[in-house]
Image (cartoon, rainbow, N blue to C red; front, side, top):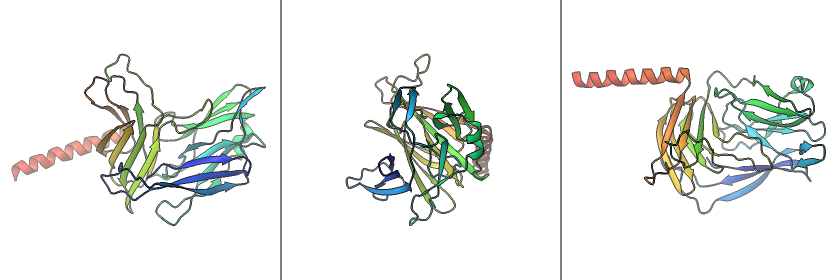
Length: 296
């Protein structure tokens, strides 16, 4: 449930992770401060070189390592450009989420057919282009072309997602409504799966680089979630808020402090069509329970 750091070491041709080790947190207290947190270094991928991002024929910026959850299993996958071939590379996170002794390792995903269709790749990043939870790829080629690559990776029919975007503290009633995701806003969620409570954390706009191509929201893959997201906590600057009982396959837009001096937060909540059906069923069952209680 804590946010880790990962970066490429060009000299040693490694991907290095700084594991954020913090105290176990109880349900309902996932935002409690741990004054003794530590970062533990480990190597998660070796013998790998990623390319610098070429802006023009004479100008490049440092290499970028980007992330996404391509199979919605709750584990972060990685994407980058190969420094030798300038081909697209995708690494799948093989950690066993429910095995506390499992270590984070990454395996390459076969993109041979895709790379044969692409030219000289300059940059690539994952985006949920249609708000379906599926992480597609935006690929920029050296010829100036930008391509959308649909994600066909199967994550299981039971894979779900939850997405959150924390906006600026301009008033919710501003016309037109502002849409300005704020870097650094942190979202933590708790949900139950078939084994136990699961904790997940995310920081908005996590990419630290020049001219980053990234999504500025928090995306969580939920594999085998039971019922709903039981708790979501959002932190921005010195402010925090918590919500309970949120449905999966949905997206929450948050206005962090409405800007009117009241300290009020506003949330717009979007459900997929099947999520709307779940909501209708929940409302009907609730009404029936109320009627049953009156009759009894």
